[in-house]
Image 1 (cartoon, helix red, strand yellow):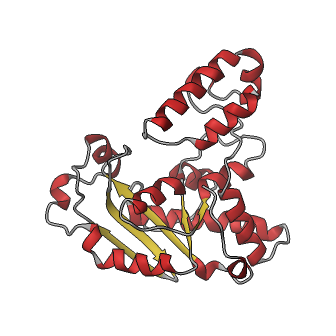
Image 2 (spheres, rainbow, N blue to C red; image 1 turned 120 degrees about the vertical axis):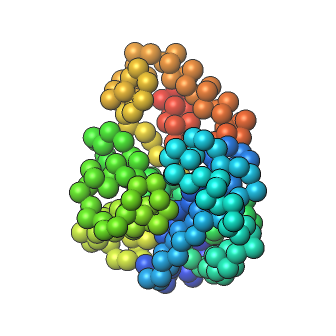
Length: 254
């Protein structure tokens, strides 16, 4: 996810250029589409449900609690005023902020919207977790791990998630300000961190949960090779690109 940011824009970018966004979708497959969008841009919050061109899957309903009945009478996103507004935003020099931003960006691309630059709080969380102490990097887990005070933010609701997202972004923003960086340099560094894969430190799944990847590389390289093959297979089948794990596994297997 390497995006070129205009050098002149880099000199002037600040928090007013950020759009915090979250989507809820019909699923996570290559043909799935969004069914709810929420975003906050320059102090204004917007949220709406949309009727997707494909049915919402049961797994997605179990997570977001959005059913096909709930969206049956909603307008398609492609014809909506919200899409027009987002098209205007992304036509300018604005920065999409999301948790696991690659997923939301892909859902926007399926609606012919193309963010020019992006900040990923999922990658920021891993970047700042130098010793690998945080067990999980899910948005709601980080909300409580960092003891963030967020009002009116139910989990797995797009509007609630962007309120948590902004608080999490501000948490890392303040962390970097303490290090003496100014706002322009800070946002530039966040863009750079978000543009490249992150080296995963510990397993948070499987038989080696809680064990460092470096330790597993020393004792069971076969497992790392098997996992890499699986991640590549999933990516090549269009079911998702876990670039952080692919980068990490290739790093330790070299």
